[in-house]
Each structure stands twice: as C-alpha cells, then as structure tokens.
Image (cartoon, rainbow over all chains, first blue to last red; front, top):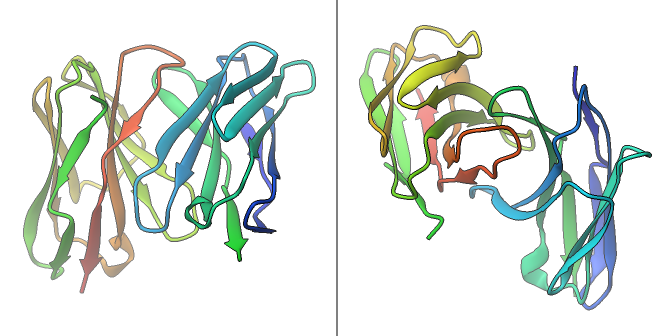
Length: 109
Length: 113
C-alpha cells in the first residue's frame, strides 16, 4: 500500500520561510508531487521530484531524498496569498495518486 | 495551456433530481479523472478514463455514472444522491502513464438537500 504522512497545520509570519515536510512509503517509486490548494479551489501543480536533491522555482523549492522516503516544500518570503493547503502526492499503479492529508499553512501579518 | 474547465461551479439538488457535471480539456490528455473532496480532506479518486475507456472505478455507488463522450470531455451523471454526497467534485486530466502530472479543474461545489 501507499502511505503519505504530513503535519496538519502550521502558522508563519509574512516574509518568513516555512518548510513543509512529507514522508512516504510506497511500493515502487515514481516521483513525488506537491500541489497547492486554496480553500474551495482546485489543487494546482507546484513541483514534481523524481531525483534526489533540491529543485528551485522562484520562491518555492522542493527537496527529495529517496533513501529516506522524505520530501519537503520550502516557501520563502511568505506572502498572505500563500495561505493554503499543501498536498504531497505519490503516483502509483496506472494513473493513481496517493495524497497526504495536506498541510494547512496560515500566514499572519 | 494547462486549463481544465468544469461546469457548473455550484449545484444544489434534491435527492430525487438528476443532474450532470461537465469537464473539458484541450491539452490532448488521454487520461481523465473524477475526484470527490470533502472539507479539510485530500481528494478521493472516483473514476479514471484512459483513452476514453473506463479503467478505474473505486467502488463508487451507482448513483454516480461517468461518461466520456470523446477525448476532451468527461461527464458525471448524478441521480438519487444522498446528503452525504455533498462535496467538491474535481475533474483532472493528464498524459497517460505513471508519474504524469494531473491538472485539476476548478471543481463543482455540490449540495444535496
């Protein structure tokens, strides 16, 4: 089976840096996705990591360690609009995605 | 363009009504999905269509009936729903295969009275 674990909620101040962790146990490895979801809206794709290391995309970076079954999403220079749920997801089987429960990030002034 | 569109945005229906949700994509994706999402929970997979054929049905009750008229369109027909079916219904599409990025539509917020 697939098991994806994320903390459920964190609060951070505007302008700060926040790290959202995800640990996973999957039968086979086919990469790891991060999605952002604002309340009542669709998940939007942020990143996909299949190799170890850090990938940077503007204010957002995603890190993967396959040997540790661990990934994190780093959000820099936090803005109020970054208040959202961040979902970690692992693909498996044919067209399936195992989602974590999502980490709700609340940005305060 | 990574847009998936869904209509309607909101839907209120009684338990005896029949309604349909619609989804469209023009990215040439050959896999299309329906998910159900309750508040503060991750999306739950309902159905997958691969090359316009139903490939996954996650034991969804028959009051939900999917249809894929062509490679760009996906429908979800609803009949005799229960109040607990109230949720956000998300459509997504992707290229076919493992590890392909799924792109989500804005969803239909469904309320069953």
